[in-house]
Image (cartoon, rainbow, N blue to C red):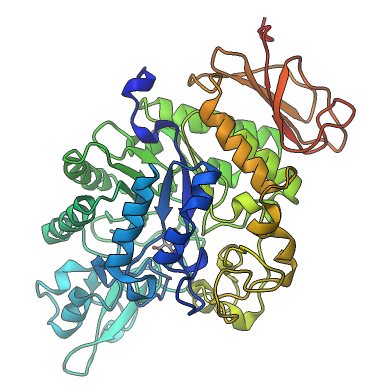
Length: 527
Ligand code: NOJ
């Protein structure tokens, strides 16, 4: 096992995910930008995070809010362009904070010059061969080449009009029609990604979150499937994802990353079989992989324990660093999922106990819940593509409230924010929560500080202790650190030990309902 001195910086880091549109707006257009992020770095420094992960900032028509990249080697003017990013990197590095950004290798924007070239070229041409164009089936090729559906709903194929005006080939897009999938069997595709990797790494970027890291490789012949392709990226048995050839792509990426040994890759890996998941974090592939078991776990002792055990077991298969995520820009926020802020705070404490890298999503530290938006405010392509049956992810992407008593709460000077902000958030602004000892923000600050500074937060071993029904108690490492979670509606007696933090005030010396606590026990309670 590696010692602290030899550990890479990410091995126990707290990453903070910035959704750039929603973090802070410096130019008053109602959409967040990079100078906005820079202006709030002191806040993030006080929160104690080690690294930022910025959702995509590259040039994009924003059909999927940046996950549709038209120029992977430049920053969108909406976010302030490359100069603003360079300012952010310099200011973050001055504070000792790392900066990672999203990389989107599975697809491009339909506005990418390659795709425009492909549309203007002939079937079978080199330009078409950078994407996945196929003739249709049925009379006149009028039916899609296979039965795959888009993750956002509807077909994963769109038919084009050929340059001569006739109905033409179809192209594959696992997401929106504005996000054509690249053909990873074409070596030009990796060559271009290598340029992109080096472009950002040479500018001081500390690593990449790799979008759809279990996508990219597609099965030869693109066979029809009988599996249910629900509008999500679950891989098990789904031919659209987790094809074994994807690992060669990750090995090639790693070869480039090895020239920048202090930079990290974190793959978005929606794979739930432990052995398959672990393949992504083999020594010559990704440094880290998101394991989404905790996101999927219900607020239920058995589920939570199962998620923790399997996340650890999957990482251990390759001696890799585990990762912990409760929220991101694709999932319903914790307080809504778990049925309350109290529960979400408890779950945050549980994850901050665990060995490995922890990801916090902007606004999670304020205890923001999902917001129900009116139909006309919805922006996520899922809403249109699902024929208005799936509302999509906008409810977890509302801009962050900073100060003041009315929207836009210091997020912007414009009241016309890209998603409307609820007036009830007046009580949840950073300004209101700063310095309030009971606020969720203060709780996160303390938890992160304790995780970073207390000597008991070491060791990769977790041990489950006997615990009353509806509660979990586990120890980490050998220095007596214990975490208890109480999912009952009544208070629960705490194990012996020095209480170092609780997610809610104790009740008569007991752990409050739906709270979690950290204790340090001088007596080993396992004996
Ligand atoms: C996963 C990203 O997290 C999500 O937001 C995006 O829509 C899809 N990949 C497509 O890029």
